[in-house]
Amino acid sequence: MNPTLVKPGLFRDRRDAGRLLAEKLAAYANRPDVLVLALPRGGVPVAYEVAHRLGAPLDVFVVRKLGVPGHEELAMGAVATGGVRVLNDQLVEQLGIPDQMIDAVAARERQELARRERLYRGGRPPPDVRGRTVILVTMAWRPGPPCTPRLKRCGSRIRAASSSRFRPHRPKPARR
Image 1: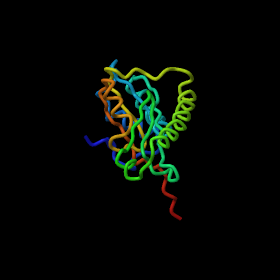
Image 2: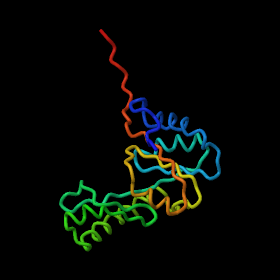
Image 3: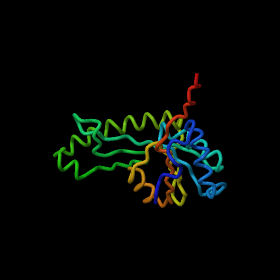
């Protein structure tokens, strides 16, 4: 499946991207099994438009990268909503990262994940995705995100929706 459903560079802003994406996903409109999940932060304005136009509930799916200690921009894994923890076993083995170091990084990121979930959800529990068709909206879709295996294990049918090549529309300057 090609996760890019809308051509890059066609949007004025994220809301415009969501409106165009919703048109591409019109077959999912008004279905009681559909749930739109957004990866904060960039995916939320896009997902809002998608959910609104499809008549579907909207929630967030929070993911935190597990950075390699000393090289935090290099991801060795991720933690996500629902207790998901995914590791790049090959990278962890190649770098010889001990389990206790991974556990310490994961614990720190789980704390931040919990803080963000409280902030984004206001105390509501994560939605139940079992038996649902989940439209996962993000601004930077990459194959095999940490949330995909968890959603599949929960019995969800996933439709990846990405506007990953978002570029704000800038009017051309007037010629003099």
